[in-house]
Length: 346
Ligand code: PEP
Ligand code: MN
Image (cartoon, rainbow, N blue to C red; front, side, top):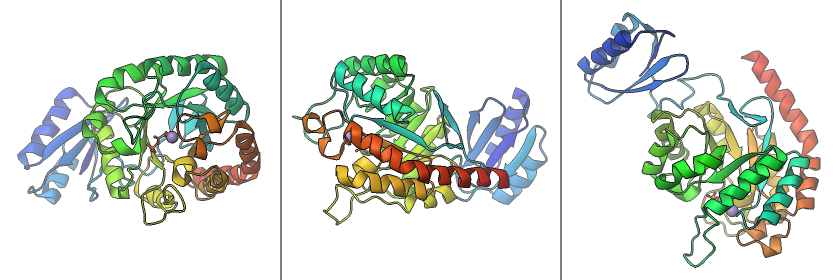
């Protein structure tokens, strides 16, 4: 159950509603939005119908809705319209297909600056680059950490691109939030619940990547953690899942995009780089992402992939990225027409 209070409902009214919910045997999870307080009612055992009926008649309540899914705030039942997330010059979830591009890891000033200038000129709106790297081997490059974050900020200054970068630990949330415009949660951390809770209060939008072997429902439950802890600016990312197939690094569950569009109002981004692990396959997957109605993509680009310290095999060259963006432009125009038609219909 979700209870939307009227805009301007008093503190006393909110408290009264909370008391009533508890009297019915449920627990309360409330979020104070800019306009209104929204109360999530959780727990089992109480009489849902009686509680709904009573709350609808309680002063200050605008709407009480029953939501059957275990993920409540992120469900389509809770919110029919898409969530839009403004980041720098981009609006994710709105009427533009947003491209985020850059190297897997920030390696040097020269590398990040050159990449940033090039991807900005080719149409990217966000610059990606890892400063904290989740590596399978402890002997591999672990990232430049704060020095890398500083370089990302410098590249933002020079190009106007917004910055998306990964945060791996709840202890680093404040530090990363000082530099990043979007906090990326990597696949390996999708169920790091301490981190998800800390992101609820970070004041920055979050891109949550689907775990290596996670179901769509688990992805939504993780997003629910961030939203339930106070941050509704969450986008989801399909980056391929682990299957029996070995021809590609992962198997891109492209079906997850329309499935998520039915289940949630949150924007959905596709990562064709980690989904395939192979440079030659990235443009085809990017086309699929546009065609299937994703809200954007996040792509790895490196000025010299053979020298990349991580994920060189799946990184596009700068020219490869330019070519891909050029080839995608017709698809993106169609995407835009469809999105605008949908917005008119709503
Ligand atoms: C990355 O974006 O470089 C990365 C580590 O991605 P993922 O968490 O999807 O593996
Ligand atoms: Mn990578």
